[in-house]
Image (cartoon, rainbow, N blue to C red; front, side, top):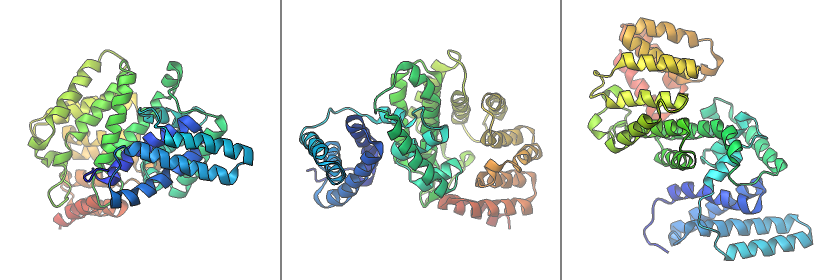
Length: 406
């Protein structure tokens, strides 16, 4: 055992999808394997805190989870099948499984074509991203009970389809890629701006999303949108150190100390984007990465090339229309054509049911109203946004913005 180890919670989050992928690949039965892995993670959180982290924590978790499967199948199976299964798993517990990461195979399994796209997203965020049901519900703008049912049905569908935890054929990879990219994007976003609780961000989730996207890029180096998503993550995560003050207060982009930005990540993201743009069909992740690059290359907030950003948003809205794109484009419109023009565009989202529970609509409205000089209305919008968000740092930031307006 090692006396010093990384934070156990972070290590378990990193290992959980790898262990689940290994068990599902070897034994099938996604639902039973997930339950066994959860029990193993709980046992590890208790034992490792007292005795230290094992030298090979992944193998430790696989062995413990396998024993949980033995116990479960001994209780539920017929005697003959029970004994055969137990013998097989007992061997698996003694023999170390091949030391390779099954997370990418698990990612594609969760995006199996037998599932609807919403179910693919939910199951992947749960099994690979490690998000709770509440976090997934917030990310997908769905009530938590509905999300719990969706995840349960997705597991049943995976089991019924007899799907295996292995990388699909090249043709199947192409069919599932859009959902896989969307899932990785959502995992990154939840890590970069947590939807609830005290922390502003969760570096474990952003790091895992970047790691998985790197793996996907290595598997599919010619896919422009994979490279675009990786570039977007790097260019965005590069600003993480400047996003908060020492007391945890949120710092908006235009006020951040840019010397704190990670220049190596910015350079890598721009290089990825440079190699990709113009070589493949342009997609939404490449366009978002291009917008992030313009922000990152600006020497200061005041020197941001907003006309170029607006032009990129015009293209992005044609390529991938949606309320969040319109929301962000409204800011660019305001910076180029004035806050009233931005507010007019923002008003087109007021009747969009997808935005009814999203606090960012009122937060952006407050910002544009403040720029327009309507301080009373701006204060009301900030206060409304603060009530709607479950993120404590955002609540404090929005409440402070409202208080400063009198």
